[in-house]
Length: 141
Image 1 (tube, rainbow, N blue to C red):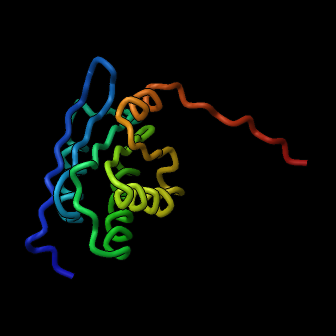
Image 2 (cartoon, rainbow, N blue to C red):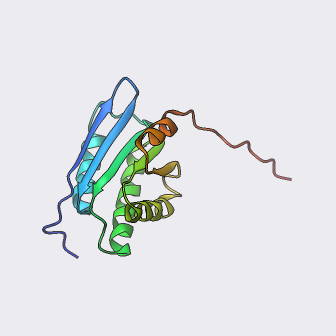
């Protein structure tokens, strides 16, 4: 499948006060632009390993198929592992975006498990700024 005509502007900045990487995605899903944006973040000296990530996906047009979201999820998961992201909050604005983001979570759970989807910006930021909880280990008997 070619991606000609599909544009997905992706921008990022680091809020150094709160130590959060903010990513804004808009337009049509495009794996090549997703990969280029990850490359830009990887080369940004302000992006440190483990930094929490806030992804605003409210401006994203829904993918045209589950196969498209799967392809993007694989690409994003591979790059997220290389970027060594911390907790990631994905902000969505519609039921379709919510469903696609949840599908993304399922597809990337093993590589990048600390992801949550939100519809409310303030709730997403509060979750992102919380100290992560670690479940107590269960002794093997």
